[in-house]
Length: 292
View 1 (cartoon, rainbow, N blue to C red):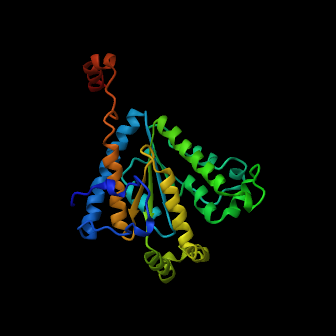
View 2 (cartoon, rainbow, N blue to C red):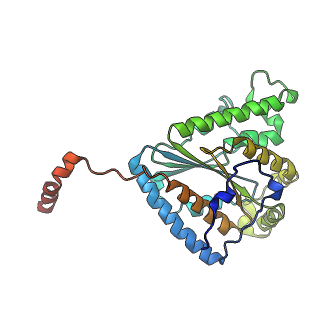
View 3 (cartoon, rainbow, N blue to C red):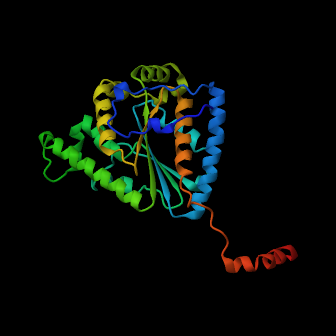
């Protein structure tokens, strides 16, 4: 695999999604890419074992993207070699009546990974400034003080919500959560092809919803909302990565490689050694077991 500067995918300043590529040439055929992904995810799994033993950090991986961008399959393929006890996946859909009785971050906060574990959010707390930005009427379901109709959901409302999200992520990072936020950037044409496959292939029919076509008509509004969210919330402790998503194999490899490269920078995360008092009696313990 050619040497890749993964920082090119990180949002470090204002980004324009219309000018950001949805494809990336790794210089390899699909089978070769999948082979490299296999090695990378094995290395990630080994690193997760150290994280679990060290137990001072957790890792939160946030995945966002338009419908059909490949979030589900990316999760399946990237975390395949993890110990099942070390990764927890949460998928956030329309808030339930119970969730609506709490503030909008509550359901995300209670799903955060414990120290030593990975947490994956399939759709994230950003739904609260993405879907609701395109459909502000959904905010009325939250029954918020001072928000009685659509006119109350103004620029000041959104700026306050972005500030709350930034504060939320800063709090997590300061308490040992390593945060990654990935946007799977698919082209409108590729989405059309994937939606057609859902209709053409019987085993994919169950994935299709007429709502997909309704939301597709709001493509530009969603792109603008995503772009604004990235520009307002990508920070060194909680960066956004915009990942080309027109080719799924490439997408998975890029995400896995960014995770591994960044996590390996945490040199303090190591498997703890044996307690010195126990180590003194190591040979004795071996003898006891051999005579058992």
